[in-house]
Length: 253
Image (cartoon, rainbow, N blue to C red; front, side, top):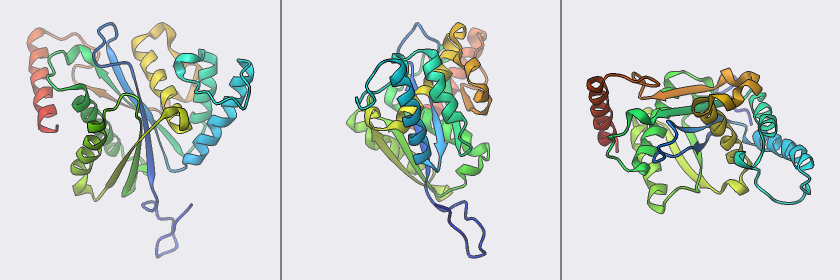
């Protein structure tokens, strides 16, 4: 719903902005270099869910799955052409902004933080990057962060929201975190496709799905650690950067 200010102009601060995230890969796996948290920003969540439903019916027909059968079509359960259908539908929505943070684990080997603390830190890093990009849809004072709950402990549920509220308090920004079961939430399933898309591009160039998504360039991608991302620096430089990253992570945990 469009809201107007006292001068009759559209009030871009009114209403809630939704940030939907999922992850691809794992921090502890050694056979993949990059870990990804990705998804999208929108104020029109219903458009995303409607788009997912339309494509899901097409994919179910191709896979000979009854339309009325409730099943989650995860990125790992469908082929590239089917996943591209979902992605191109999502990227075609003008009020959707695809986002991601890609973490180069080769430069994080000595991080002493737990995976939960690291996850919170990377989400915060992504949000700070997005605010620096001056994305119009983020000109808001209310954010609902919607996250897949499959890898989340009860303690972490409260930790992330508290962490983000404290971090953005000075911006007069209200942040609410909702942990959702992806099988019951089409928007989270869409975030899964974006995360897998970005993960494949960085970890498996031969399976790069972005070639099937012409508007992939619209994705805002934060890279961490920025200075060493994708490089194999000298041992001294690597150790200095790791110490700096570790200090920042501990301070912000």
